[in-house]
Length: 635
Image (cartoon, rainbow, N blue to C red; front, side, top):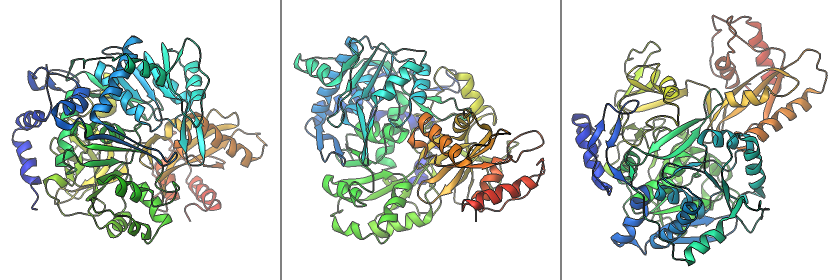
């Protein structure tokens, strides 16, 4: 069908408030909002000011009352255990109400924070929605993070309670969560009142009497007692959750998403951008620890009345590169949303796509990719193998849903390889030079978004309005800085070319090289260090560390490098994918002392580079090239 994109986008441009008032009709409001956009409130304005709502009601209860009680809401498919669980909307409501009663009994109420540190299990979804039901603010921390990373988030969020599990599962191993959690609480200045622990058959953990609460036992008691916990009305502008994302200083940023705007944006995106209807099966192969998991495993599909798939497994090795085709076929998935890394891994194991033919994928209509740059070759391979449209989109933890897309629900636009599409309603994308002037179409510059940001985006950072202003709004007044560099072509398609800060993208996970450098610097033999992100065929980017040792250190450098790698994996976790450190004599710097990370990265990635005018000693870059070549990098 002919695309209605331009018509819809122009309708938003003509009257943004009327557009978003119309989109808000897809949500049940306890009390209608007074203003669509209150420009006087918040840092840059607040959406649906004065409105009262509840996200759990809209994601679960209204479907139970509206005829979807017996429809599957959640399919949990664990490739590690071989167990598949299905929950209807009515069954899910019972689980959420029982858990909400447990939380309420522990004093959790409106505005309180709850940290959720769990693997990909149904109870994690129930925990998020139970918090939303009570008006409490959840903060999900990815289960792969180490104790000090979790402690940092506990200290910032100051949760009343932590919900966790005994363990998580990974290919070939069981990862104990409880020691990591105990270590984090020991490290943190803030001490949660209690921990609610889900025991798992694969590894049970010891419980601290009087402090740790058995998740299953507590929920079973409330369920048996017929617990009834109503949805608590909250302001549309009240926070639904805080999700921590890497900061350039190593201190994570607590990104807030509110209740009202978040619901409106996600509900609108499900049908108009992803082209999915209520009752259909949608699968986001992400983790609930990331923004994609929040938006498109949990909230988006459930707000829209879909069946959502939660997968505990990997695209390859569980048991082989056909795992995703099995899930699509078995559960009747119509659309899959995942990271390009997934398909690079599958392609690496099955380059001719032969495993696809073993499965009936007749329900499958569209593949969506996001989280990192989708290289054209991966997109072409997926198109040829699956015989469906492969659609790239681009967004951030901060926006909560796509900034650019090729909106399937409005009719597909032509696909341009290398581009994540065109701006969605609410986003006025500009490309500026460093002085803040707009550059011509097709010219590389700083990608920024004209304020106000649309519903669903972060209104600020948790307890850090000034940090929000400085990090995102100060450099280009009137605009939100995405920290990405790119171009917009003559047809309005965006092309993201690079990051403009030191956040690297490892398999769709945004990680701070600054945080890694802080860990490297703690090694007693390391005098100076730098971490850069280098191109990786599978993960998109991986970190590469450089260390300069103190004078007089005579220990084996290979042993020191191994220790440094171990430190990063201990302090930040396996998610960092930190595996390589190179010992060098000195770091290339400007005369003012700034390390030339960008030039080092270009050398490692075999990109064209020119000698920086401000370099202190040009000979150092030749030394860097030789050190990289000795490891087979940049040659």
